[in-house]
Length: 394
Image (cartoon, rainbow, N blue to C red):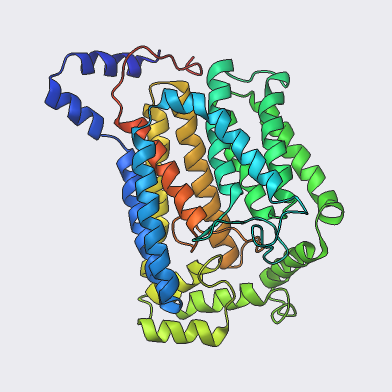
């Protein structure tokens, strides 16, 4: 047990009921809850700029997300450690289900050529969102049981789980969601104590494989998106009216926000005039910047920074290895997803269809983000028992 965990345990046992309650409430996880609340409200407002009817639905999704977060919060981590493998099995089954060619389109309706959503009637459900949650829980559980992965053989099972999930999601195809598993896997595995030479070998392999993957693994439209972003950085506008149309229009709207933004009617007119595709979903950050300007965009970035700080602080204060890794995984996933989405909106990364956590329209995305936040809060509010050991501490 770490020295900090031992001290916290002694402190807890020596306090009265009111102080014990205070210790349970004094957790950095509340920073994540606060940041998530701000981002959710900003998202509803941004969506309502051009799609008031969808903003109303997003508000309903938020209520469902908050309810699920509250439920997850009261589930003990030990119960989650037992249930995580069942959640993973369910996620795998659903990922296979959306790929089955004989499933009727009334259940799985392709969107932009991707079979990634299941029609649930009132809303669509995206199995890849459940897969992210299951992946974090199962990977954390595996390392907590097995200890630090100090050999390549110790990475076989975690790597196989990641590879299976990523492979199924790529087949949909949903390359954006698949890419998010890499930083999540890296964050959890590094904190679990993997030898750093394995990390450098992985980075070297990625650098060698990436050029070949561009020609062999990517589809023509995916290569075209990379070509467009390279041309965009160089100031070459030859893709502006074709594959780079969405990126160029998004950047224009970001710039149109200025420092203080525009009133709702003007922002709506700007977005509609520029014909920005997916303005309520993948490109919602452009609407945020147009509507609320640099001030609003900065508030969003600071909120994400606060969320990451809260999650990683939880990891530092966690009383056991499992809780530590879950917090790291959640922080890594949310921050990486934010970076990719905003990067593609402002022209720094190719457009991959990644949503902006808590802000983009969609029940599956908002629900999964709030479930992850509930997991963090559930870890944080429980008092130290002094009976659990961090397998990665020393």
